[in-house]
Length: 286
Length: 250
Image 1 (cartoon, chains in turn yellow, green):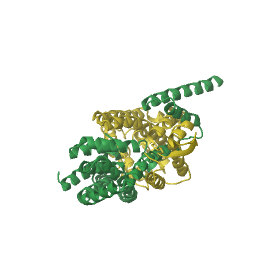
Image 2: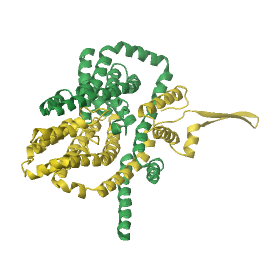
Image 3: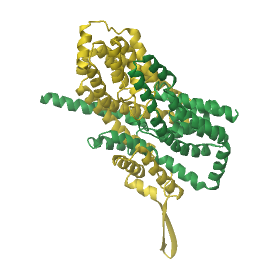
């Protein structure tokens, strides 16, 4: 049914011209509503549908046609809202204008949302945000208001520029989008993000996870007839074997539990119980 | 500021802050650093806001809702911690902020579940071809459950929590091991964020890079920004070499 629809639109000629106003409307909806109504069932679906709707109104003038496109675009959708969502929306708008079938546009969405979520989550949340927020929080803890202010500036301008470039860039690339930004380029970008992400996690994790032990070992011995007590800090011994051993073990435990299919909430529970007991008993400390 | 006024203003800040996290992401207002700093400005003690927010931020670094997972509500924790820290002291504020953030994860799960009503309403509008009705729902209602899931607990805790918080604070002071326990929890919690990240990354395929990052920090003491810059350089080098070799072979 979707194929016939595409043929009809193509036959009808260039009646479905999307103008600048429609594109901007779609862009603003993405900015102000991308994840509104997010839910477990279909995640970002309503936010996506709301964002593409100004385009669909133009490219599907026939009410029955429009209804079908409206329903189809409420399908499950989820990707990164900053890097990914704008790109897919822009490319989708271009495909709509070219009279693509609903099968094609759904294929675009489903095909790109997973890989781009991986790239976006790694680059934006894990990498960029961890860096700017660790610096900003460090300044804030020294009582410097420039810390939070710097973070706000480093979020507001880059995020909006990146969304703008993706949306209008992907729209201009038009139907070529699938070939020029095809699987190869996305795989390469994913690999780049993965490598950077792993190095950063390897460095950040031990610096931010804070687990130490205040335990000491006392040994009493009689030297030359005098009782001598030597006290050894366990933490020093651990550091001599491997620095940041306890943070790494904590991370290893959390990772292992998640890999076993535990939900983050259950892992939190384990960390809370473990941390509270060991902290209260004086085995570990922050 | 009377408690009820503070409850309304900070409750609104929690609502608006979470709206920002849902879509505009203009200032990442649901991050504890921002949520706490602005809460500090509101209660007239920006230093307290930065202290509580900054401390929670370091705990929450790398903790994001990957794929829609529920994580501790550090935003509400930072707002409440700042408010009660201003009334008492920083230690008490932080000791309250962490359990608050953890308890409110339950509210987040409920909220993400309840939001299914919007999908079903949207389906009905689509069946009727009623774009106007759908758009009205999006503008007026689609943020309400999300916003209230943050705003309401903050409002209630501040409006009615002062007596309780005083009692809790006294209790903490009587039994210092409780504070020690909470502080240790705070040190361990960041492990969750990094573990979630590692789970979505192919660690087994590239273990060398994880080790490299660790060595840069633990042995060479390079600051975080330096590690990030080195990471980009290493990734570019790796890809440059890898794809050049492939092209030469081809």
